[in-house]
Image 1 (cartoon, rainbow, N blue to C red):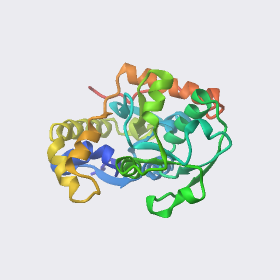
Image 2: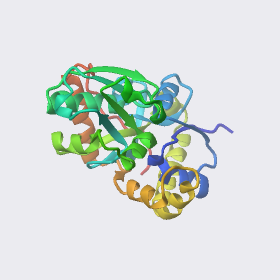
Image 3: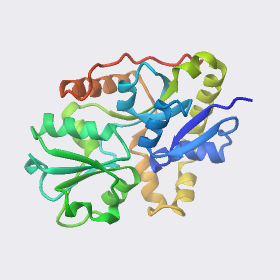
Image 4: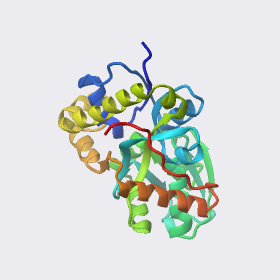
Length: 279
């Protein structure tokens, strides 16, 4: 029997989904491929996955290949601690600075560029690389953009002498909107040829999210044993996130795309086309 190949983000921000898939039984009937966002972006664009979360900018870049899965995203209304700019000097002084960008994502790169140019009128130099908290990257850069668990660890262990900027909070100040960091997409060819499997995967993903969100404390306690965070830190972090995809989220996403287009980071703003599923 054909099983949907489902990408899965292996960061703590997807812990509710992860817990639902592994402990709630919602992984049945699917092949799960956990990876960092950038690897999932590449895999589904290459046709190696059927359904996957992707950095939200990737939908805009490849909208002709995908449908959006309704009702699911990774979003935040403001600060979220896991998209973090760490700088040697105040953000207002970063014009012309060398900023190192994590290679693990793409959406956050564009978000940072929008914030720095449109909120602070800065024009830094950017370089993408495989960053690690242990590498001392600030020895060779003026600022570093971390995402995911690396960013959360840096935020929770802030050191004197550095400046920390939560990009979710900066985005809210600039736009007064939420930020949609990831969306779930479906390969169009797969959706057209296998509508029943898309429906099944949609029900499993949304069911797993619902299960995980009603068992956050248990999920955090389980993850605590394998992460450099306490259960309380994990559960507090998850409260900052939203996993829906409402009309308000759609407008926030389109605003992000429009601002990216204004800076020449995106050629066109795509229509948000949803996969046909029974909700």
